[in-house]
Structure formats: C-alpha cells, structure tokens
Length: 164
Image (cartoon, rainbow, N blue to C red; front, top):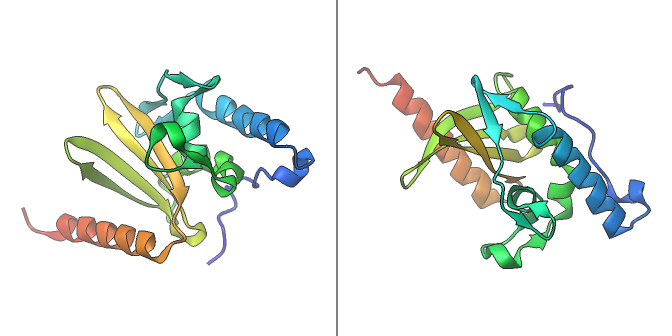
C-alpha cells in the first residue's frame, strides 16, 4: 500500500546544508506553525501542548523530536524530526481509512492512538477536560513496537464487537 496523498514531505537536514542549528530551527518552525500559531482539532476539541519550556522550546516539541526514557537526557532523533509535519497531518486525517485509531488507557490516563501503519508512524494524544494534549509521536518500525500496537488495536476491535 502506498503513502496517502495528504502526507507532507519530510523535512530533511540536507535541505538545510547539514547544519544542525538551521535544521532544528526549520523543524521547530513547522511545530510552531502546526501547534502554536494554529490549533489542531481532534474530534471537535483543541489539541494543546504543554507550556513548559526547555532550552527555548516547548517540552512537547522535544518529546516528538527526540527519544529516551529520562526527560532531561533525551537524544535528538533525526527520523522523528524529518516527520514533524506528519504529526498534524495524522491528527487532521484521523478519519482516513488508512489511519488506525483507537482509545487507549495508560494507568489513569485516557489516551488515543493514531497509527499510520503503512509508513510506521504513530501519534498519541491524551484526554484532558475540554481538550486533548499532544503526548508524543514516533516511528513504529521496530518489530516489537509494531506487534504491541497490532495487539492493542486488535483487542480494541474485539471489544467493540462484543454484545453489550
């Protein structure tokens, strides 16, 4: 299956002379456009980002462009950076038949997963009163990650078929 036509082009470091500073500015400009200067909507409610700033950029920006378990020591992930425009696109096209979308719970947190399996990319939103928060976005090209998401989606699908 091919990529959907609505999926934006990658933001490539090579288009910024291989200069990390210029590239990071370009990636951040896309994030600002998509989540600060405009409001993404999901199921009729605004998608927000956290207001905490780290190194001059919102924590949410760092979360969708880097990886690691310890917040203070996350490592930039070029492949996440390249796909920065995909985050908003996936939210905007949640109802597209290519997007697998399901509610998910992590402890007390109500989340929603949007997975574009064809290109190995997922966006996770978290429900808050009157809005959603962009939680994270990442590649799903590792076999264990894909299997885990496939199991989650299948379990949710089965739960929807049960008579109530």
